[in-house]
Amino acid sequence: MSHISARPASLPPISLPRRVTAHVAHLLILGLFLIALAPLASLVVTVVSRGWSRLDPTFFTSSMRGVVGAGGGALHAIVGTLLITLAAVVISAPIGIAAAVYLVEYGRGALARALTFLVDVMTGIPSIVAGLFAYAVLSALLGPGARSGLAGALALSVLMVPVVVRSSEEMLRLVPSDLREAALALGSPVYRTILRVVLPTAAPGLVSGVMLGMCRIVGETAPLLLVAGFTDSMNYDLADGRMATLPVFIYSQWQNAGRDHVAYENRAWTAALVLIAMVFAMNLAARLWSSRKVR
Amino acid sequence: MTIAFSDMTASPTRTLGSSGRRVSRFFETGSRGVAVAAGGVVILALGGVTVFLTVQGWPAWTAASGLPQNASSLWALAGPLAFGSVWASAIALVLTAPISVGVALFLSEYAPRRVARVLGSVVDVLAAVPSVVFGLWGLMVLAPMLAGPYAWLSAKMGWFPLFSGQSSATGRTILTAAIVLSIMMTPIMASVCREAFTQTPQALREAAIALGSTPWEVIRLAVLPYGRSAMISGCMLALGRALGETMAVAMVLSATPGLVSLQVLTSSNPNTTAAFIAQNFPEAHGMQVSALIALGLVLFAITFVVNAVARRVARPRKEA
Image (cartoon, rainbow over all chains, first blue to last red; front, side, top):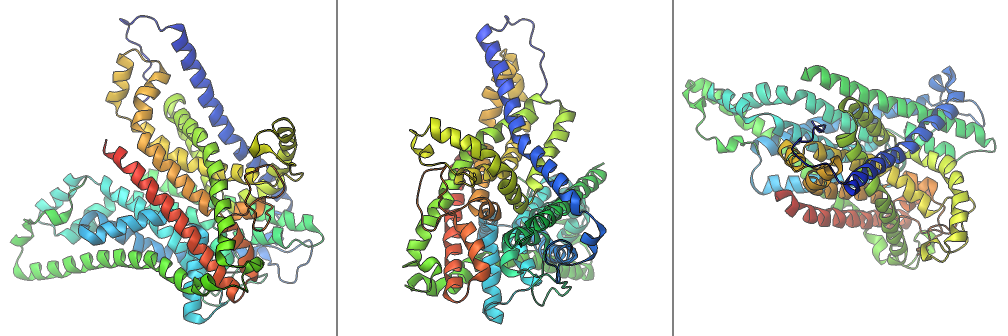
């Protein structure tokens, strides 16, 4: 839409300074774009080349229990990331979408204003503050020092809900009023209009909103470092005890590197590769899904 | 603006039979209740952040001992850290703003549409890279790479206050941290700007073209003015992210406790609040935990103020 270059023939030719400015601006903008991409290229090359060395079956089938130096794997961290992310989605998606439905379809007055304001503010909440919040809640309930995967999921939900509300709200507002009015004119009550007309119409957008929120939280490190903690062993129980996750695994491999620090660094890079692949696959899935539905 | 259902009082629902009406009213109230409850939960949870952080951090505000780094009071601890957060984010914002607008303009104005779609998702990939990976990369790749240029900068430009002092041999300075932050902020700000730029009304573009504009003049006359509020809110989003960014800074920055300094190339750097919390929390106990939670409240307050101010700045433009 932006590529109308046909210049009306009746106009005089463009003066030299203006042409030069146009070209300089073009080059400058291209240059800025390339500058922005350079770090990405370097990052991808590094992660792949250094992560390659430990991309072996052991990495995916064993934990770090009892491992010193080379060897070991991140199965415990991969399982932890999947469980905690899933739990966070289960908490955040219904709450976020329902809150968005409230804002778009019902919202009037003080509650709606407060909600919009808080969601706005909370979109910018530092992830570490969410972690501290989950820790504070947990230690108020269970006493200080408790760590668990569920607390991690709680912290991540604080980060995810605003994303889901924001994007769902946007998607619901895109549903044409005509559709709502048509459904109402046919005698459909409001709740059925929402369930049968508004939500299905917005569904691809809602799903990609949830996926967006997932991508936002799956790489979060700080809150999980605080409340889910770190362990070298498997833990399948969200409600009990420390649970390793991939991001925290990366951090702790670097932070607690032993004497053979290259082995630790290699594990960190491989974990980074796996984590990026997970995020990327998730992104791709969301994109494919929503484009299929739109068509 | 959509028309909310609460405005449509005369719904044809009334023509249903009495039992149908009762059932329908039951679901009506129910669905409304679910939506209201969800809104309430969100408000409670988000409001709860302040309450819980205040309560759990309370002992640290008056404590004189037992604080991390043997600080004499929480204020002595929080001050330099708050400075570090704001300083690193400010540098990052200065770096990221022009690059992001450039990226957005390139994708919306210059790149052919099909290419733009592919490149746009490449930029989005940058946003999806977890911060801990950026930390690892910044630490092991970027910092050693920058140590040389830093030495050159401090030798040739040492008269400039920001570049004064002995340059760091490892490259793990606050400038490196800010560069990593700006890399992480760019896709956020760029996508906000790009969205607004592509939504510039066609009539505005055509008007500029009809006046004989070059592509750059179309940008200057139509696209940039239209996208002004988006650029501001993009800056705000990016700044919020940078202030709260934890892991990348915690890993890249080699910090000196309690330091306040504007020099960006030396090996002694102020720490940021978020990074300090992450570095110290795993081993903290007792009063130290309270202190770190109180620091979290300070960080929260800073981001809150930034967001509130930015909202106020952005609002009048939006109506224009």
